Structure formats: structure tokens, C-alpha cells
Length: 241
Image (cartoon, rainbow, N blue to C red; front, side, top):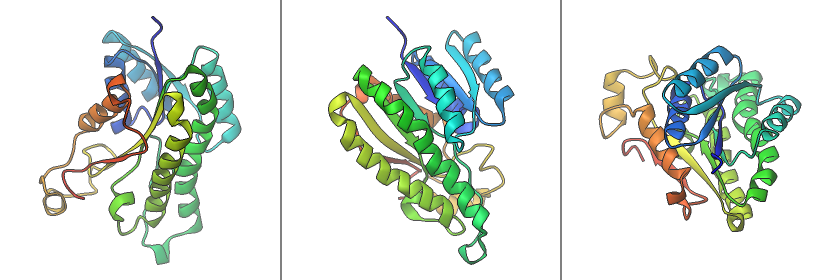
């Protein structure tokens, strides 16, 4: 039986690497995507292989539609990609009155346009296999809002709406489309952003989440067991909302 293949964008980061390891442990062949950190992606793929999994690394800029399409076509020539985890994202925070145009455009370009550039070319090939999982990592900021993140909240909130609409389009084709909205997760991106006192005040569970906890949820949504879950935004945030 041919292994299902999964592409994890931003797969070498904190949450992305945990997702990549989880999917590999579940028996998928994982394509670990990076933009500028190809060495980190290759290192993760090698660790997955050393643990008995199958993985490869790939690098492209999700904001470059042509380069993304070319990279995806090369990957599709190796076989179908039936699990897509849209995890690539950036934030560039500023209170809205002081936000610069480049801050708005960069966050929208990576988080929202990147979703289109990666997901759209993979949708029809996925439909042809009549089985697929599209999972997009968003944020509690899109659910509750967050000061200083109007750009990030706008991009991630748009992904919630896109998730619901795309789920309707492919529901009859064996494909599910869901969003996972993490709260404060203990990763390199969040370290230094929140003190223990701030986390205790903001999070009813009084702790940051773990990347592996997000990965476990993604792993379930990518599995056969989640075949009737689609069009949903699932928060994982310690009861913040």
C-alpha cells in the first residue's frame, strides 16, 4: 500500500516540526517545507528518517506564486499529496495607528496569499484521489482579537472563512478542510512574548500549550477517524475562549 504524503508548510519551526514528527509517526511520508531555513528542514527530515519515518525537505517562498507552483508540480510528479498542513506564517506587530503598510502587506502576503498559492494548485489533484485533508493553522487572535495584531488577526480570520467555504466545495469528494487555532504555545516564536505572570492571567489553565498538543490534534484531523469533521475552526488554547 502506498503511503499517503503530507506537506507541512513552515515545517521546520516549533509547531511545524512537531506536526511533521506526528504525521511521520502516524505513517505518512512527510514533506517538510521551509522558506529560508532549508538546513533546518533537512535536519528534521533526517531525524524523522532516523526514527524510522519517511521525510524529505523542500524550500520555496509561499508568497511567490510561480515558484510555489513549480515546486508543487515537482512534488506532485513523485505522487499525490493528500494531506496539506498550512502552517507557514509570520507576524509583524504594531498598534494599528502606527502600523506601516509593509507590515500589513507582509503578514497578509505570507499568511493569506500563501494559503492560496499552496492550497489552490493541490486541490484538483487531491480531488482526483477522492481523499484529502486540508488543515490550516490559524490563531486565537482570529477568534478573540489581540491588541497590536490587526494585520495578523485579519489574515487568520480570513483563513477561517476560507476554510468554511472550501469545505463546502470539496465535501462530496472525500476531502475535509479544517482550521486549528492555537492560543499561547511554548515555541521559539512565543518565548519572551509572555511572562509566566501574563500567561497565568490570560490562560485559565495557567500554562502555555505544548507544540506536541497542537500536533496531536492535527494528527487526528489528518486521520481516517476525522472523516466527518469538516468546515470547523477548532481552538486549542487552555480555555481562553
